[in-house]
Length: 117
Image (cartoon, helix red, strand yellow):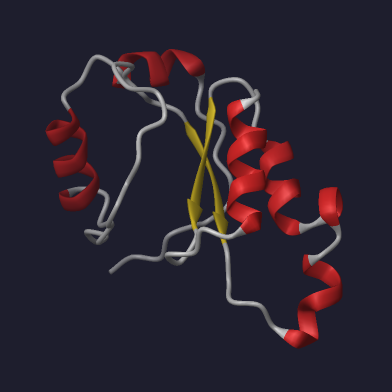
């Protein structure tokens, strides 16, 4: 397996618009087979924009279980990591969050903020 860079990539809107016209299976097959991305396992994936096709720059966020040693960093409100991730999202971006099956207050706040944009 080759080394992959996880540095952010600026994808032009013209490329994303072209992806919107392709079937999901075509894109998925290429990403798995040609780009060497392993198949993820996802449960309970929810679409918040039914009937709309989505091709966007993904901004990612992973919630971790609370840790006492990081408590001060994770309760900082708008300065917390999840709010910083949401602030990075602009027009044409989508926030992809691994919430580890958690649906607590942090998820509710994130959901309200994202839906208001």
